[in-house]
Length: 404
Image 1 (tube, rainbow, N blue to C red):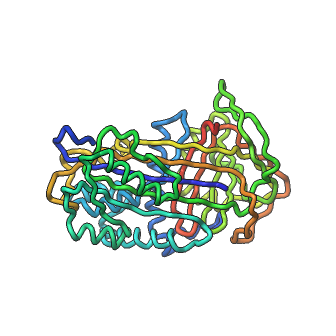
Image 2: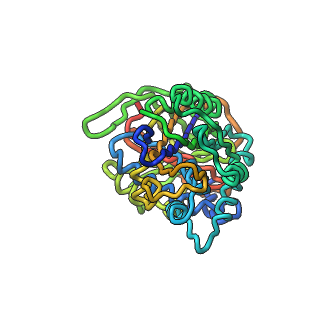
Image 3: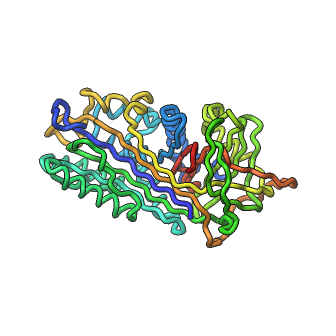
């Protein structure tokens, strides 16, 4: 079954202490529906961050969960004050003259409720937790707010005993993600004094599974000089497809049972950068309105890929920079020590394979039809965009350079 697992971890440290380091394709047309209040802002932030991450790793696989990063940073803003808070919320894309801080957190609260409860056919676990050194005492108002809006909790650990603290945090993440993410902090050189963990676990079942008996070894062309052999899945049938006339690419949209949908985008040879540069909310809306329901022979590699990113420089480039300096104001969390953000660590794992269990057909509008069959073979680098199409939240954005 297709599987996506994401977690975002943010670490804060005391400044100055050297010992502590730091629906169907038509869904987008209703992006301004009440249950999608955050969709435009979150999607714009997601695509901007996506381009920054891709630019930092042009020749490697990339996978991020933008909605989990937005949620973590929005929750973190509850502990910020003054210019730090303004800069953080504006960096997430909010116009504070049009939307109050309270409304932002209410919308995230509503989004989290929808993602957790609106679709029982998807297996999803998501949430946040705050781990504080036992010497710190969070403000009661901060603890109450993160519990109310984000259903989060603050847990005391002894960061002086980093081996034990790391084990406690790893066990927490492991339990919350059903054992799919382990040893999150195995490579962290030394502890912070406050760690914010955001996690999302998502397991989806194809609405129309691939044929488990048709997979075979085929070449995947990583670049002009590198070819690898991968197990290639296949399926033939009626699929939402588009050969874009604006950007040099082809794409298909597949559905999971429930509220998740995925776009697989295959740029023309040598045109990856052009397609990435053209990604925007308007592009996805145009794709959604232009997809054709037609006969497609689809070939997609099985893959299991992970990645880890320090987002500090990327967020700073996007205007969220005070968090990482002595100008940071986290007095909304505690007044016991001046804090600044030392690391923003994001890890992601993506696994895709065929699913042998056929499920209900996806719902949607009456499709347009295309008479000529189309063959789409994703055997060179391609993009992956996974959304919850009820809230139109970007669950995962990825780029597959080498599926092996």
